[in-house]
Image 1 (cartoon, helix red, strand yellow):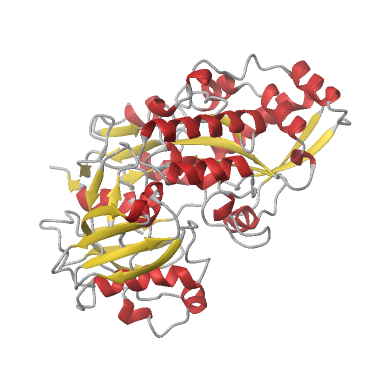
Image 2 (cartoon, rainbow, N blue to C red):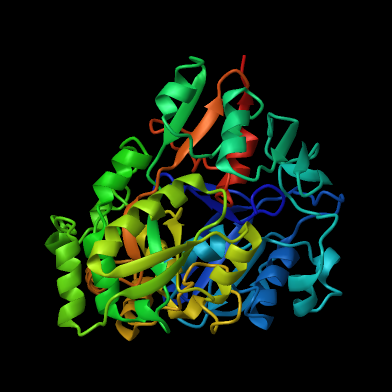
Amino acid sequence: NGMIDEPLFFFDTAKSGVIQPWLGRSYAWSNGGRTVTVQLRQNVKWTDGKPFTSADVVYSFNLALKNTAINKFGLPLANSAADGTYGVKINFTKPAYSYAYYALGRVEILPQHIWQSDSPSQITTSLNAHPVGTGAYELSSFSPQAMTFTANPHYYMAGLPKFKTLRFVSYNSNTSSDAAIENGTIGWAGSFIPSIQKLYLSRNKKFAVTDIPLSTAFLVPNLHSGPTANLAVRQAISAAIDRGYISNTVYNGYASPTNPEALILPNYRAQLAPSLASASFGTPSASRAKSILASAHVKTPVSITVDMVSGYTDYLSDLQIIQSELKPAGINLTIAQPAFASFISDQSTGNFQMLMDNFGYVPDPYDYYYSILASSVAPPIGQADSVGDYNRFKNATVDSMLSQIAATNDTATQNADLAQIEQIFAQQLPEIPLFNQQDEIEFDGNVVANYPTLSNPYAAPAVYIQPDIGWVAMHLTPAK
């Protein structure tokens, strides 16, 4: 998404409120927020030479009506229809102002002429060995170890992309990845490097690191079964963790402790509830955690297994610290290290007691909370969730507030509803917030220039954020 398949607009994850034309030129709401009319670019072609038209957009949105797996963001779609060759009307069943990011910025537009003969279920399961898109790049080769993209010679944005070839390489751990970054094999990376100042930046003055706060690291508890379904257990875990110690020990202070409402700051400061402006987790204390369990009549010791991908050395270090902090509180934490594929499968289907991950990478707090809290995005446990509500949190008030936010363009009303969501999050701990995810992204200035920075946050620089990866890839320039 972003490299080959493109959405209609680019919503800058790193700078809230910045929206750029992509396949769409402009859009306007009508019908009380139930209809959005999009004007499309003209003279765009698919990589097989066929013209891109409104029929492709209508097909892509109507496809989501037929298959909930394709409508992965739970959009309240009614229908869509062409408004001429280069115009589209997308209709919703209810006011959908705040769904703009997901509808216009995350739905991949597919080529109707390629997929129209396949059923919706086939589209979600078929191997797409020769993807046809409108993007700046085409897939040249693929293997489990590496995939190569080459520039689309007919791309419609003049002068883009700048790099003619991009090669993505797979590593089995941070250790092997770090070695490749530090010796100059990799020009753009998003890997945890211990002592980054000493081991990376000091070795070459052209090496650079961007660190834009974009997500929050969490412990993700199972809310339906096992020990963490009990709020008191979640509260005890939170009370015992020394977040500042994790930041200083593992991340050299880069990953600062977050807040009880897990709001990403400073990006979302304008939406922070005044009553929570000074909220904190308090002094970490095993005795306080033990008291929380005792007051709730929870028998100790409590045994919990937490999953983390083998090879994710920073998260494993975090969990080892948490493990030692929870033991005096009467909580025995076992760290399981599944392979990446198993971790992703168990996470998406809700098959875990607890796991660690980070969430965010969206342009505003509504989308942030929607992705991890909206019950509409999560299928039943056992079915794959590709959005973020992996523990299937469900709260009628939160769902109602999210719907009310989507139904208005009034900022004051939206912020009042967000304040209620923040309060519920802090009280219920559907996820246990840890720290502002260290989003250190490494660039080798000997190879690449014009990457996003704090002073020029034109997109999220991380190699794992879609569709920003496509926007960044086509704007990167070779170093002089």
